[in-house]
Image (cartoon, chains in turn cyan, green):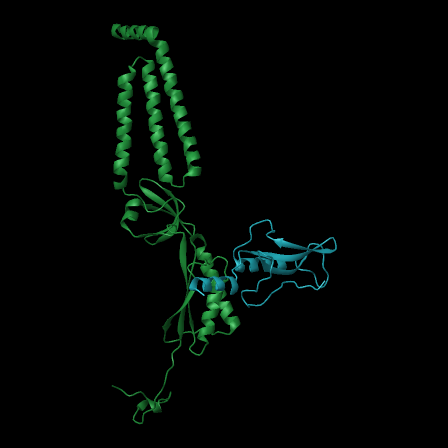
Length: 104
Length: 281
C-alpha cells in the first residue's frame, strides 16, 4: 500500500468530517409529534457544532414541555445531526445528548 | 457707453449669424457630459460584477470616461466651426499622453497594501478598512471606534493584512501534567481538529510535543482554516479542547512551585517562631 493510499484509507475510514450540522427535533403539532430540522434540509447547514449545540439548547429551553404534558408547539428530543441526518456526539462529553427527551 | 453698445451690437450680429450653431454646441456639450457621467457610472457597475479588482475597474472606467469626454468636446467644437482634423489630433494626443503617463508611472505610485473591506493591523490598530482617500484611511476597530489613519503613517509602518491569504493556521497549545497519558492526549487533540467541519483536510491537522516544560508536557495542535472563519473557529477549538480533555480525564498542568525545606543543625531558622526575636545585623 502506497503512502497516498494509506492516507486515503485513513481519511475515509477513521474520522469522517461532517460537512454541516442541523438541529433535529420533534414538535407537537395538533396532538402529533412531527419531526423537523433547523435549518431545514433545503437550507445550508451550520458549519459549527458548537454553535449548533448552543442553538439546540436554546430551542429546547424556549419550547420545553410543561411537566409531562406536551402542549402544541413544544419541542422534544432535540439533538444535533450532521448533513446526512446521523446524530453526532456532544462535543463537551463525547457522548450522545438529547435535550427535552421524551419517550412518547 | 458707445463701446458697450458696440459690443452688444457685435454680439447681436454674432448670434444672428452663428446663434443656432452655438446653442447646438452648448446642448451637445451639456447632454454629452451627462451621458458620459451616466455611461461611466453604469460601466463601473457592470465591470464591478465581473472583475473583482477595484483598481483595474477604476482604470478601465476612467480611461473610457476620458475618451468619451474628448469625443463630446470635439463634437461640440466642430459644431461651432472648428476643423475636425486638428481637433481630433489634439484630443488624441492629450488622451494618449494621459493614458501613457498613467500606465508608466502607476507602478511607481505607492499603493496601500489593502482594499476596502479587508481586516488589517496597522501599527497598534486592528480593524476593518472602511474607506481610503488620498490622505487617510478610515479604519473601524472591533470595539466600534473609527480611526482616520494618515496614509503616510501606514506606508511607513508594518501592516498585517489578514485577507491577503485565503487560509490561516490555528494554534492550539495545551500543557498536560507529566503523569497523564501523552499518546491519548495527542489522539484526542488530533481527532478534535479532524472532526471539525471548518478545519481544512489539507494540510493535515498535526499534533506536536513542543516542550517538556517545568510544569508539564506542552502539546501543539496545528491546523488550517479559511481566513474568514479563523477567529471563531480558534475560540471554539479551544473550548472543545478544554471540555473534551476534561471528559477524557486528561488533566491540564498549571503553574506550581514545589518548595523543599532542608533542615540544617546550625540553621537559626529552626527555632523561628512568632515569639523568637530576629537577630540584629
